[in-house]
Image (cartoon, rainbow, N blue to C red; front, side, top):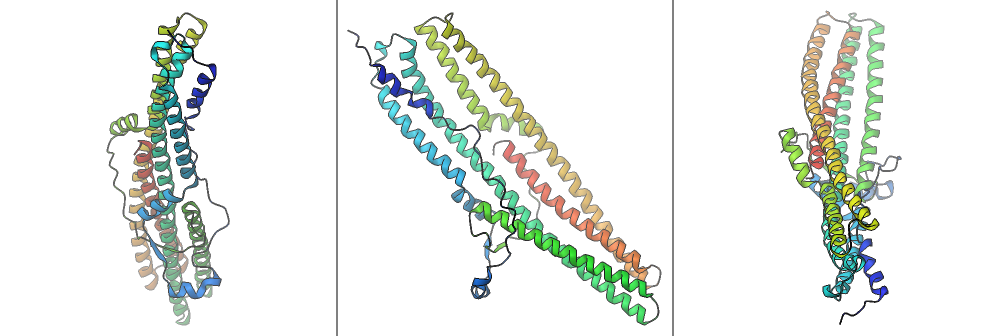
Length: 386
């Protein structure tokens, strides 16, 4: 004799519907606008004098961020809650005998919920991995921004030294009667401009430190000694075809949409077995399956666009970097030649200042291009799901 199941049991099993987590975890946004400082606060000046800044490698920065990121912590808590709900539902589902099922609703409570629990567990794990990858990419961007800002300060210091050297040279020529007062004035203006550029670079470095510390979840005024990392990253991906193939296999969004398609297929099967597909609810189930299939294809297309853009950006960044590197070499040679011409009375101080400024600009452009290239490599790796 078949035994009826109370309606409240079916309602209790609906807990599984709450197991799925948000499809696009939101990671921490930009840091506050007010810049931090490069060294310890004035109140701890004595301590900062006795202790050198702690070394921060990129790997250590990633480790700190993954451990302290608020959104990742919330996601892990949600996953634990989903697992607990899943165990509760699974225990209740076991009490349902398949021979007692006579309706689609009852079948969905047993078979659909079981399938949803497994799909939820898989999707949540993929979601966490994707969120960790996104957090890792953000840390890498901010870390390289700090390195870039440090290099910018160094370049502006070198530019100031060149401007001061040029000023001394012009003053010496003025005393020897080989230069005009206007030449000295022009050289002095160049020194002041270099000082202003250095101040701007130092402020940029402070802001970069602040953004990094904010994302790491540490003291906003904490000082770090970053690993000197000006070397170029080598991408593991060498072709667009390889990138697309990896993305279609690894991106969690595609796997999630495929799991949703499987659940829609199961619903249709249950209506086919325990009801009739021509019914109103059966038609809705078939429509949902068509939507799920379309979503899979649309998700793939969207990710393919993202990967293609990331790959093209990497190629463009590489070309720009190589171009600016050559321009920097030419500017350096032009500056050296112009100094010799000036020392021999074949060029004006204005020409020296103009060429020096062009040299500084080319150094800054190359420094920025190196940062952009490294970030482009990391962005492509993230786009393929690595």
